Length: 290
Image 1 (spheres, rainbow, N blue to C red):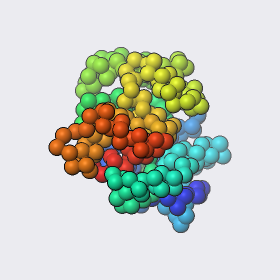
Image 2: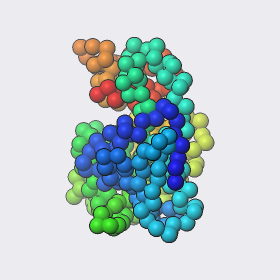
Image 3: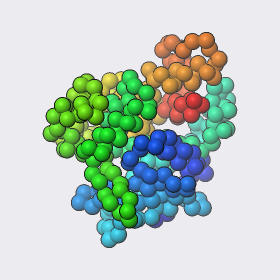
Image 4: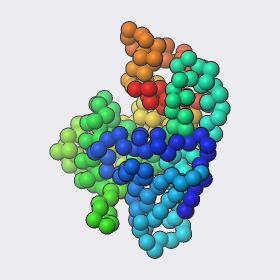
C-alpha cells in the first residue's frame, strides 16, 4: 500500500523521533523503516513503513488480512505521521518569528508523530508526570511487557499496548513492582476503567471543540490540564492544544531567548499569542530545539 505524502514531510525526522529511546517496545526502527504491531478487532497485524518516492510504502508482514484491516492500518499511518495537516500556513507564520524561523528552516517537514490510540496517549502522559523521560520509558516498557499483547513473527517479538479492558481489572498493587508510584497506579487504572466502561472513548471526544474536549478528559481522575492538552495535541491534532506548563517547553524558550531563568507562565502565554491556531506545532519545534 502506498500513501501519498505532502512535500512538507520528512520521514527521516519522524524516524529520528521514533528511535529516541532504546526501551521503546511498541515499534522497531531500522535505518530506513519502522515496524509496528496493531490489533484491529479479531486481527492482529504487523506492518512496516518506509519512504518511497513521493509517499510511504506500507508492507504487511502478517498475511491473509482482511481489506478492512489494511484500510485501518493505512488510516492509522496517516494519523500517526499527521499527513493531513497543511503546514504551509504555519511555516509562513514561523518564518517571520524570531524564535521559530531558524527551527522551521533546519527541521523542515518535521510533523507531530502522534499516538492515534487515545488510551495509550493518556497513559503515556500519566507515566511521564513529574519524572524524567528516561524513567518514563522504563515504566512504559515494564507496563507493556507485563500487560500488553505479544506477537511472534520471523524470530522477532512485537508488542501491542495493553487494552483498557485488561488494565481495568488489575489491582493497583500489581503495578507497584514495576516502580509505579501509588498515585500513577491509581490514575492508570481509573483511566482504563473509564474506557472499559464506555465513559470515555476517542469517538466521544473526536468532534468536540477544544475546551469542551479538555473538560471531558479532565473529569477522569488523574487527567489534569497538562495531560489533557498533551493528548489533544498528540491524538486529535488540535492545533491550539499545547502543554503550557511543560518544563521542556520552558527550557527551550529560556535557551532561545538567552534568559538567565525559566520564563513565567505569563511570559509563555504572551509568546504563544503570536502562534494562535498553531500552538501545538510551535511547541513541537521548540521541543526540537532541545
